[in-house]
Amino acid sequence: MVWGVLEEMRIRSLGVIDDAVVELSPGFTAVTGETGAGKTMVVTSLGLLLGGRADPALVRIGAASAVVEGRISVPPGAPAAVRAEEAGAELDEGVLLVSRTVSAEGRSRAHLGGRSVPVGLLAELADELVAVHGQTDQQGLLKPARQRGALDRYAGEAVSVPLAAYGEAYRRLRAVTAELDEITTRARERAQEADLLRFGLEEVEAVAPLPGEDAELAAEAERLGHAEALASAAALAHAALAGSPEAPESVDATTLVAGAGRALEAVRSHDPALAALADRMGEISILLADVATELAGYADDLDADPLRLAAVEERRAALTQLIRKYGDGEGTAAVLAWAEQSAARLGELDNDDDRIEELTAERDRLRDELSALAQRLTDARTEAADRFAAAVTAELASLAMPHARVSFSLAQTEDPEGVEVGGRRVAYGPSGADEVELLLAPHPGAPPRPIAKGASGGELSRVMLAVEVVFAGVDPVPTYLFDEVDAGVGGKAAVEIGRRLAKLARTAQVVVVTHLPQVAAFADRQLLVEKTNDGSVTRSGVTVLEGEERVRELSRMLAGQEDSETARAHAEELLAAARADG
Image (cartoon, rainbow, N blue to C red):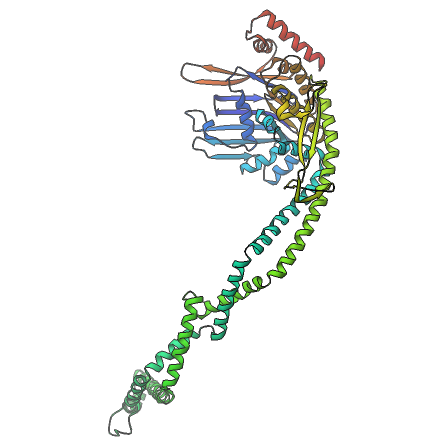
């Protein structure tokens, strides 16, 4: 049952298409038109809706932007509907509205269900909604990596589960091997680094700096270096405040302030303002007495010991050397931070032997784990390859290749440094140890050969279609878009391709861009992409062909002449045969 249908697209200012509405059938829709009419714009538009790369060159000349809008029927509960709702999109009675705007400057915007979303979300939904296949996909099928990917996809969980575990172990093994190589190949450099760190730590330990010690010693050196001047200044200040026994008749500040206080105390009761001044004078007297006392104590405690000054300067010199070498001139705190980091690093370097032993054991364990997982992958792929090849071969019989045989070759390359598979040491990579190659024997007596070497363009088209039909049975998507998948095919083979696409359309939506009338005749709906030219501007439009118009288009595709009686008769015959087959 189809659980998602692309109902229509509207294309504006994209390439040669000015403004066109593309109405698609829930079943089989064929898109036809003359060469250069813009049929590929239909494919390009759908690619944009599905999160494809936005090329500003696609914007029609003279337009500010190109816009593609689509209506996709997605029943509630379908994976795409759930993911869209998680992103804040709203479904309108089971219909999901998708739009993509590309400006001429290259900016791109995407909207899903009325909500602005990242373009990446459209690509994520594409995996659930549409399978797009074109001539580039046919070329991709020639690559062994793509062939292995196709086989893995067909095998399902039998491969995906061990492959996920294999991938995790493979990545960990690479990290372990890289660290082990780094330790062993750089042993000399690491030993030299350890010696330098050890020497530096010994220097720091010998001096044993304390946090902030450099600032404290600088202050002490400044005080000791000017001890005589400080003592003399303190004595003079004390004499000025409290008087000097050597000059008993001299006037000092304490005596003067005390006299001023007594004068104010005598009359303070006559004026509150003067009483406040008297209080303040008393505070001054107390403050002067305190300062005088502290000055006397300062002078008594001041140490002018030259030996202490020499010791301080010596200690400062040792700290300065450490700060310059290990503290970047930032003080003893930076030296202590360097020592802490260096001690940790030295611990790592000194434990190289233990680390090498530990990493070697982990490497061997991971290699054993990879061997077991690679064996599971090989066994699962071998089993799936037989079923996959038989299914594709059966499909080819329905595509006018009744005697063709498809098979898979699974091989490994011996490597003494590899993992063990089947009792042999073989090379391995991120996807296992298997080299997968799709082989085709197109007719009896022909040896199986890699499709990259033994398949013609038409045969390759049919093999790819057969592969997709097989996938439709085990891993279906609601919509398939084929861009000239019938390239290089004609005659009876084209009829069989059309018949097989029609059969596929019974369980999924199928959209085919084709130049073959034999294929288009089997479609439930045929769209014509037609260009017009007013002498200065070329435009293309999309129309639905029905009745006589469809016969005329099929006649043109058959003979290049819409009004040829022979071509018309052949076109009507094709349509009648297709309807009878359906």
